[in-house]
Length: 78
View 1 (cartoon, helix red, strand yellow):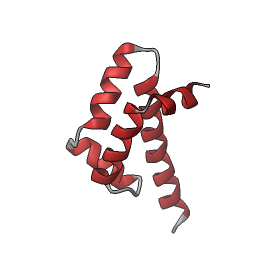
View 2 (cartoon, rainbow, N blue to C red):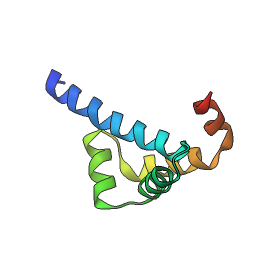
View 3 (tube, one colour):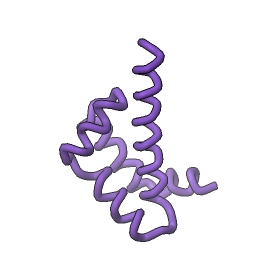
């Protein structure tokens, strides 16, 4: 993998990680927006996941499970 492609994937992965943190954060506006994005299969959602090198449908299932698991929330907040 070229350095440029690796950097681009890392950037899109950072976008996804930020969305996960926003979904469990204290800002209710960001929380709702991130949760909606993470649980949708919008074109934007799919494009970001593909650019990050992941299959959107599979990862969406995992994201939803993680967001529903309060143990995960508490781990990320500590």
